[in-house]
Figure 1 (spheres, rainbow, N blue to C red):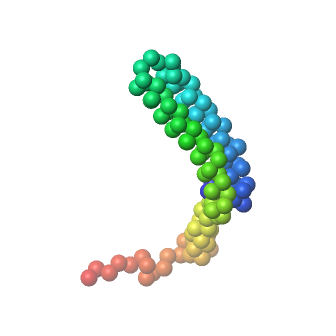
Figure 2 (figure 1 turned 90 degrees about the vertical axis):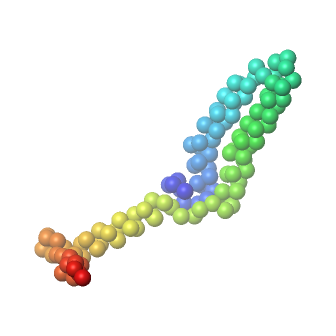
Figure 3 (figure 1 turned 60 degrees about the vertical axis):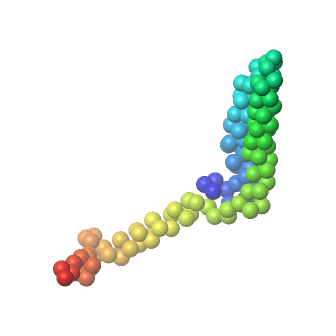
Length: 116
């Protein structure tokens, strides 16, 4: 959503270029951390190893294959920087409309309070 690219495909490509390596390294480091469970004599630890491998493969596959494919088809088209600039521009325009000769001209109806 905050990618500087304008098309969905370019946004996905930019995201994979910036975050893809982190997802892959996270999956590989988790796999490296659970390798000792594979050599365990206990069946419970081996089962935990199998579950971890499945979970890591599931997560990495979703992060690198499935979600980018879905986002390239149905992802946002808006560019967040444009959306953030619009309210600022409107505020600046309103301030400039209220300025008179370099001084701020207050509207008398908005600065008075009713005391009822």
